[in-house]
Amino acid sequence: MEMITGWKGLQYWNTIFPWMASDFTFIGTLFIFIPIAYFYAISWKEIILYRNPVSILFFTVLTLGLLFVPMNNQLLHGINNFIMTIITIFFWIKYHTKYNIVSTI
Image (cartoon, rainbow, N blue to C red; front, side):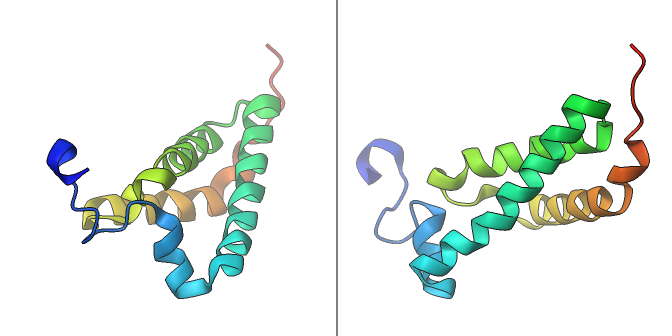
């Protein structure tokens, strides 16, 4: 892998699961993803029912996070990605119900 891609497989985590398992155990890692799946479902429901723009942003961030799971957690690497992810999460928590208006279109 290192010869082909340059990613040092013996130096860096290749996925997020061993990284989280070292902090929460392998079983604990599964429980970490339960609230993520719950918020993913809520945001998807709000997109479908209300065309909620805040939930569209949050759903997009969660989708990127889930796509990056096999490639390590890129949403929390680097200070700019970390801050933007945290701001998006807090913005969604505070304002997502405000935009749940039934569309007449």
